[in-house]
Amino acid sequence: MEGRAVAPAAGTVVNALATGQGSAFAIDLETTATVELTTDGAVVGTIAGAPDADTTLIERCARRALDAVGPRAGVDPAEYGARIRTESDVPIAAGLKSSSAAANATVLATLDALDRDDAVDPLDACRLGVDAARDAGVTVTGAFDDASASMLGGVTVTDNATDDLRQRAVVEWEVLVYTPPERAFSADADADACARVAPMADLAVELALDGRYGEAMTVNGFAYCAALGFDPGPLLEALPAASGVSLSGTGPSVVAVGTSEALDAAAEEWCQRPGTVRRTRTRTEGATTG
Ligand SMILES: Nc1ncnc2c1ncn2[C@@H]1O[C@H](COP(=O)(O)OP(=O)(O)OP(=O)(O)O)[C@@H](O)[C@H]1O
Ligand SMILES: O=C(O)C1=C[C@@H](O)[C@@H](O)[C@H](O)C1
Image (cartoon, rainbow, N blue to C red; front, side):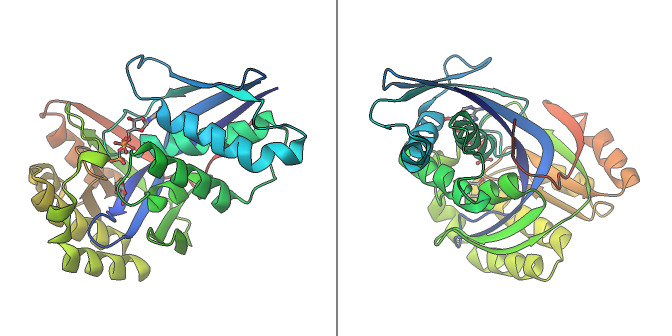
């Protein structure tokens, strides 16, 4: 009994740490999870290329999916375990929602291993991963914004306090991603500092709900660079040509959207900085099994 699923990473429109309301969009970088069910009761995860990374999140995801759907598949969750392996082109703790992609891929791969791919509605499957992320302590708000964008594709606006989807839209943007060499785990972010930019975050959410995603990103980007102590230089370098540019998640990555010409110009500037610059696109299709 083996299952496989793939889920995309995401970039930020509005970070939810200040108010609990957030917005994110799926991008064309992905994480694959394979899950093999076992009868030894143990759930064990490995992350390809990252032997020291924390596997608690994916283990909690597989366990929650087994508990939720196992009985319907004739599997006793108490007796069954799982071997999970993730492979990813998303750097961990870089602001590109590697945790949401890994959680969604693991939940769906577990359902696939149970041969019950359609047993759970996609948003509920996403909520299983969000609850697992809360259990594993890798999130501040649960990050339902990031997780829903990864699960559904497109751009989502969510209430992370209630795990409700407020809006989803299909967008087709070119995306530029700059990832500095350092890493920033979301769970370590200074939530009190973020609360100080709540009025700006409220404005950014209003803009996003109005479909003005680019402006929302830019308002969010400057506010959170200030709150979390990141250099706003890369944002300024992408402006005014980019239609939106923001710190992604709790950083350190920066994402810009706009015309090819605008992103070419930003890429030229960002390539002078240490780290990686990647060109990608938004993803309309979210997480899939198989
Ligand atoms: N590919 C992966 N496979 C398994 N677990 C992962 C993977 N990527 C991330 N994780 C889990 O998520 C944790 C990092 O979560 P964190 O939210 O800090 O990173 P992120 O999702 O990349 O950042 P952000 O939320 O700012 O976008 C890791 O410690 C690990 O437990
Ligand atoms: O851990 C969290 O709750 C979050 C982390 C970041 O990705 C944010 O962008 C997201 O809105 C919430």
